[in-house]
Length: 429
Ligand code: SDX
Figure 1 (cartoon, rainbow, N blue to C red):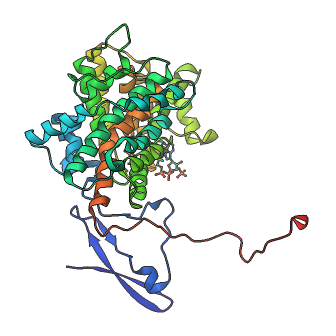
Figure 2 (cartoon, helix red, strand yellow):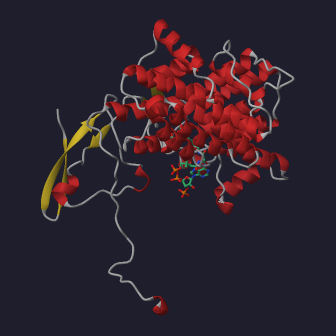
Figure 3 (cartoon, rainbow, N blue to C red):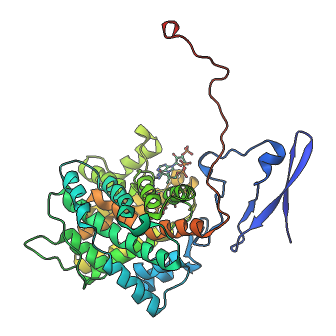
């Protein structure tokens, strides 16, 4: 049954079709609104606006549901690897054995970055450049080393570009870390799988090879899998915006890295640790910190809490909390920050201020603890998020690329600046 929405404007009535998604989400299609009425809609922060139809990820923020291509995140977290989940997110189905092996081969064959790209890292190593800035710059550069500038024409091109980007972003991230500590770049090993190879490139020293434990490899696979996609979040919407101009995959995902770097978004995992360390190192206890947050002192927030979509728990935070506890047990690690985090969560979750505002732990609240336990330095936390989110960015770029009817994104605005002004001679200003 097709439904419509009626708008009464200036004594006239207009009807617009209601669109229903496969999970019964409803939207009013206002594509013809401006042409018919001269009006546009205004929705600061796009909280009520759907920018596209997408078949990649579904979130129910009230029920705490997250599904990649219809499969619950809890099942994937338990049964899948990051690479298998990435293939699902990008290509829409779990890979067959043949598809998995082909994708794994392309990943491995493209783990190296072009030797000439290393010159950039030499320059970075003398600077205080943040690894996120290095990662976005180097991801953008990949297209310069691709045949035909990274243009994608066939399914084979798409599969190759996706695997190359996923493989190289991992090598770039590890190289960015090595540059930041003045150590030589470590080359990938052909015998290691995706997550293990990253850890090897991060932590192997010229004098000491690094062998990741199964617990750390499992935790890193889970961390990356849980970050693979998340509907039209800030960075993914940025990738779609850039992709809509027909910019190549690498340039579009480089823009996603930049959007992710902000503390309100991907930068929150590092900000959570900084917040916990601040509580640990000050004479302030958890209750005092929570009081300051509620009083909005200096605009401080409870980092790792709240979400634009989840108005209940973020299912990823539940999975990561359990993984952090398992990993610490397995590695026989105790981290006072985890105790502070637990106390902070318990305090906030029983406080009306947070409950009324539907503020619950999000993906970033526990992820930092896991990264810390792996020995990942805090300035690399958001880079880890970027590596995990790469499949989602690629999948959203692909949706635009595959849609022959796609149009360049070009939102309108309501102008509120000065009107009817004229140029004034300098001596009269
Ligand atoms: C990610 O979109 C995604 O999917 C993102 C992500 C992904 O996978 O891509 O899930 C990853 O970015 C997770 C979010 C990581 N960010 C943080 O943890 C930073 C802390 N959180 C806040 O900055 C905030 O909660 C946001 C940005 C996440 C959401 O902001 P909203 O929905 O715009 O909330 P709001 O600013 O409208 O706040 C509503 C009220 C306000 O209080 P009042 O004005 O009503 O008194 O809630 C308060 C806010 O002050 N509030 C918080 C708070 N977040 C909101 N108060 C204390 N601590 C917080 N964290």
